[in-house]
Length: 115
Image 1 (cartoon, rainbow, N blue to C red):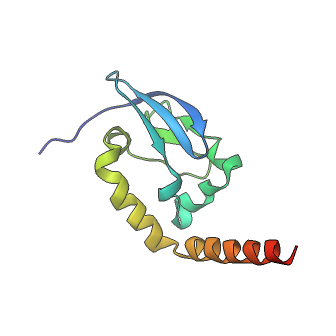
Image 2: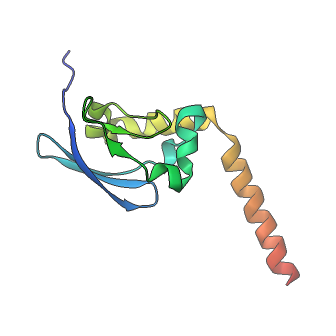
């Protein structure tokens, strides 16, 4: 079994929690990180002011954030193979946001009905 060695060359923020990433092999990928932002390390990245502080680390050649969060560049490169498992893992770390979203939607609907 071989492990792909690749490096993040560059990126652009293209949307909410979404990055366009260019790799050293010339390939590129657009990734919506929203579904995997759960748990102690990645959960804080739900805050766009922190998420948007992403940079490419010059030593490890991957995306890093000021809170210590990062992703293996091979995982980023092959994101479609890993995205579902990462999202499931994130939900297991932090199931509360989905519940809170439903409560917020209910509260907002009740507020609208009262107006």
